[in-house]
Length: 385
Ligand code: COS
Image (tube, rainbow, N blue to C red; front, side, top):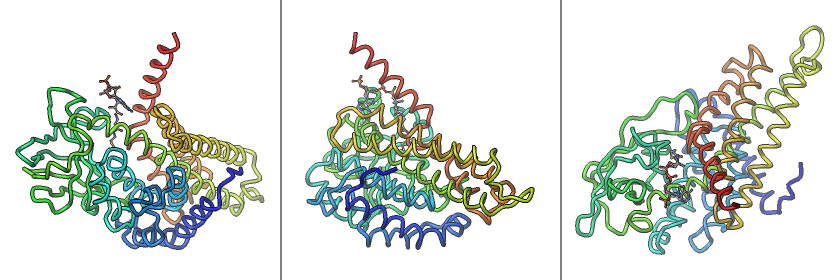
């Protein structure tokens, strides 16, 4: 398929592919085995200006869009989903500042983020808040010129390694979603510490930690947007970032498909390469078709969002839902095509299958995506009456 990329888009895709092939592929098994955070790769991405792709030029970025970011995420995911999660979660954490930050906040934080000098994390999830985004228990209480944060965030990607945190906390618990507010909190703020590092099934190169706020005082100026807007900040952030999860799905599925196809050409049974058997060909044909359909949807939705479309919740949820379900199916099938070898750590597809599972869970489970799509359909059909 030719997506008629511009010169700049081709350059980003090719450079991302080169970094993935030269820097990520050789170490991905080791990063996975030892749960090693990919600092060397983060530095390489920073040197190549990858952290600034989607950040406006006035704040030190390249001034491009979510589409170019998607191309970079897809290529990194083709090699290692743990590495691409670190990179994509950085954008997730940055969006609240980009979308709702004050001029002062943007000037203060975005240049360092664009340069890859400081990593970012997004903190919404808690023990009793995840799918139920309004169920946040962490509180932010205004005290003079400061907010005091108390509570614990769970399963936070880039936790501990990031230096900038965008956090959703309740400024008024009685108001439900309208009682939430968004804040930016810097690492090393007294009262802000990190809990245990999680031991995960997949994406083991990425780090997942608890964030603990114990009477953590932050300046009043660290409020993002207005008080009470936190739920909207979180929803709009997720609307924008979910296509990135879709791109992760396309990338990991592509990587698994390529590995399975190459293997099926090499492996001989009954005197012939297994790819000559129709049963295997049909599996590969389905995989190739589903990947292309997922890629087309992710690209189309990302371009739609880049063109300043107003309400993108439904389309963004569709891209995430479809591409990540494809990723799960394709990675499972890649293991099946490769049989015993597919199950062994010597080959990359068992890791891809373990990694892919998280895509159906984080940034809103695929059940939640269906709820978002369903709610949008109800609204749309009500308008048409
Ligand atoms: N953009 C703008 N406004 C939105 C919105 C969006 N995407 N989604 C909801 N809202 C608004 C609603 O219109 C509603 O406004 P009013 O009070 O004026 O009517 C308000 O926000 C509350 O919305 P709703 O009643 O739909 O909230 P719910 O608590 O039922 O939650 C879902 C809705 C399930 C969609 C939300 O909780 C969600 O997205 N959950 C998943 C979050 C997630 O991805 N978690 C993973 C961890 S973060 S990496």
